[in-house]
Image (cartoon, rainbow, N blue to C red; front, side, top):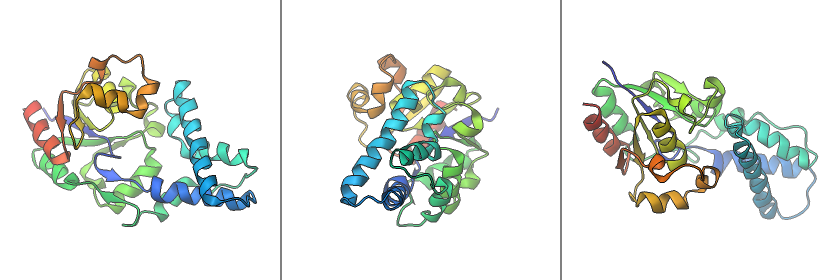
Length: 242
């Protein structure tokens, strides 16, 4: 039997271009198109808060798939400033798939190679839409490790909805309230990536996502194992699935 291991991406395998490239680009576009004359740094902070509010409103309403639709959220924010013309976010992502904005995280490739050599089936299970994530995986030359890229807009669910991890034996991620909660609710094993391996209860209360999932019990957010990076996670996965 070939076991299936799913990987989260951001904070586990890759640094995506959103925070340093895509969101600043969108903020400048809206700032210019709206005719704002004030300080851009102040506008940029306000723009980010509006994006976060759009995300939060969707999660709180249980619209988990839409919460990661950055095209839709950006359009709504731009309309607040009277701007109707917004460039396609996936196109902006592609323009920022350069070393200045994206990179592999430590031991990402080594961990993937270790599991691939061991014969596991590897898939991506990310809450980032595939149209935003696939260009980054291609640019970083790791897309071929995966047999499937599972994303909200293609799968119809998002973590921590247990349906999102259907058919997976073990999930590796860095968010207790998305990755680990989703894995536990799906009845599968999980490995929490955390460089400092902090106590679970402390990390759980400090995680921003916790405010959306207050009903989740601490044991639901407790992983099967903890690893500092993808290579250590790969070794622990070999032990768990032997």
